[in-house]
Structures are given as C-alpha cells and as structure tokens.
Image (cartoon, rainbow, N blue to C red; front, side):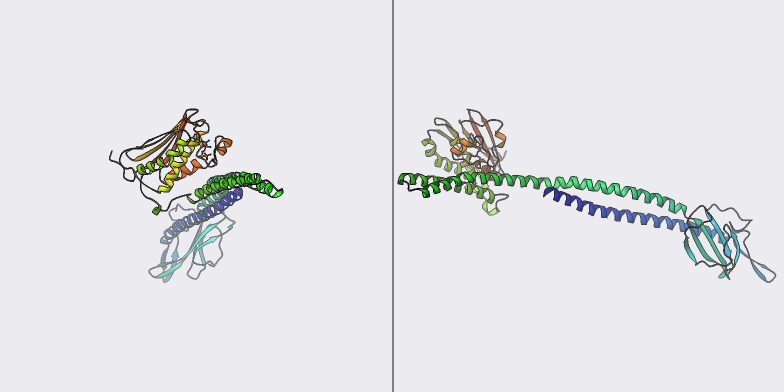
Length: 426
Ligand code: ADP
C-alpha cells in the first residue's frame, strides 16, 4: 500500500515537474530562436541599406540609367563590405535582372518582397539562407529591386547546439526529478507509515489485552452451562466472569480516554485551577488507602496558590495514575511522597516511592502505550500498561512535561511540570 502510494507520488511529481521543465525548455528555445533571427534580420537589412545607398541614377542625353559601380558588393568600384552575404542582385523596376554577385539567378524577379528563408540551398556551404528582397526608392522614384541573401549559419549553428543540449539534458533532468520524487515520496510517507504501524501495534495490543478476560468469560460461562454445579462453584464462575468484565470495562475506558483526548482539548475545557488545592484534595483521597497498604504517606505542599489553566478532572487523573503505580509497586512498609513545588514559571508535582524501581533499559519506554516492565506482575497488580501513557497525554495537553527517574530496589521518582497561568515575577 505504502509502496504504491510512494510510486504514485513519484509519478505525479515527475509528471508535473517534467511538464513544467519541458514547457520551460520549449519557451526558452523559441525565445532564443526568435531573438537570434531578429538580430540577424536587422544586420541583413542594414547591409542592404548600405548597398542601396551606393546605387545611383545617371542621365545620358535624355536616357536615365542605373549606375551600380559604386554600390558595395554589386559594383566593381565599390568599397568592400564586411558581411557574410552570399549573393546580391539588382532588378530593374520592371523586375528584369540587371546585375548580380554570387549564384546565377533567374532573369526576372520572382521572389516575394521582404524576408524569406531558403532551405536546402545547394550552391553554398550553408544549407539555409536568409533572403531579403526590397524595392529601392530615391526622391519618391523607384530605382529598382535589391535582393540580398546571407548564410543562416550564425543563427542555426548555436540553435543546433542548444537543441542538442536540451535533447540530452532533458532526459537526464527527468531522470533526476523521478529519483528525487521517489526519495521525497519515501520521506512524505514516512510519518504516515509510522503512524500506521503505531495504530496497528495499538490495535494488536488492545485486542491482545481484551482476549484474556474474554477467554475467562467464555470458559467460565461454558463451565457454568455444561454440568449442574454446586452453588459455590457457580458463584466462583460468576465471580471470575464479573472480574473479567470489570477488567475489560477498565481497559475499554482507558482506550476510549486515549482516543477521545487525542490532539487538543477544546478551549472551554480549560479553567483556572489551583494546583495546591487539587493536590491537597488528591492527598486526602489517598491517605486511607495508602495507610491500608501499610505504606507511609508524606505530603508536602507549597504555601499560597499555584494557578494553572487546566481541566481539573484530567489533572487529577494524571497525578492519581502516578500514585496508583507508587502503591502498586511499593511493598508494605515502604513510603510514598507527594510533593508540590512552585517555580517562577512552573508548578512542579513529584510522586516518589521507595518501591521496586524500574530497570534503566526500560525507563525510556514506560510512557508508551501498553508498555509494562514485567507483564505478569503488572497484570496481577491490576495494570494494563496504559496509566503512564494517559498521564503523559494529559500533561502534554496542558503544555507540561512529565519525566521519571528510578533506582532499582530504592524507588522511583515521577515529576510533572505544568506552566503557571500567571508566571511569578523573577
Ligand atoms: P500499568 O498499568 O501496568 O501500571 P503504567 O503505564 O502505569 O502501566 O506503567 C507502565 C510500567 O511502568 C508498569 O508496568 C511498571 O512496570 C512500570 N512502573 C510504573 N510506575 C512504577 C513505579 N512507581 N515503580 C515501579 N515500576 C513502575
């Protein structure tokens, strides 16, 4: 699926970029060709004007004649003209040939006036010639027609080179674009691939977690149905079914929570929350249950208020998850501390215990969904591996940070930092 998307991305990228490149190359070529031809025509026209300026009209007796002796290129007395003119011809006003230089022309003028390109002109080294035919007037009177032609090589040769360059360069550029498209496609699909993998893993983990209580429910229900059992055995079956149902309900609750609070909280969910009051209330809730586990509970809260913009219910749950874990992984006789501290911009909440600790290699993963250091022990203790993931999600929704440190057999320390609604002056 991802390879197909990557291929499609690369294909569309190559197609769009390639079309732009081809159009750009075409426009560049036409622009260059037109520009070169324009300047070439200008030069040819200027040469024709120089030749025409040397043509004179003389009168012998009462006969008018055209004298071309002084006309450059056509006349023998003329100064040499430094041009690449291949041929020049002079025609009378009646279009009869009078004089020429270069190829032998037709006796009468049959070409159209203006510029023309003569292709495959065999008599000279150049294949193509540019020909200009124009009438020459003096004092309002027509003297005749001048026709000149020059080799188009100065225009065609550089254009040939440009065509060669574009012809070779375009496939190379297209191949490079295709390769870049392939690489970019890979990079673009990488986050989606990762998210998809995470989703797959999450679904697999969730299904796996649901399978055990489901199996317990099914087997106990079948057991209850199969043979007549004593009321005590039946009660056992029902108890297991009820426990499995409860565990499933907790898990589904956690999953729903994670799904519902993905992304951002609506702005109206945030309200000014005094963390000192909230921590005191949480501490009061836990005092008796911690004492019942024969654990020592120490609470240290700052003076005054610590206002944060937050959803009190969610913040309570984030801290309660840490306290639940501290109770779960600290053996009787140990101690748990709940500490609140004020910093200039943050309120810092610490939950410390003297429990089993977390191995250093597992520490970076404990906030991942369904991650448990010791699956069996955690399951027995009633954990599904989502508590810390939920705490982290809540803290991040509030723009805060959560981190953990731990030493084996000495205990673990969890710290939440939440930004204060009104930072204290430094
Ligand atoms: P669980 O529901 O299994 O406790 P959590 O996400 O809350 O899942 O915690 C992930 C894992 O981190 C736990 O399985 C446990 O191995 C470890 N852990 C969390 N808190 C503590 C703690 N205070 N002491 C020791 N291990 C802990």
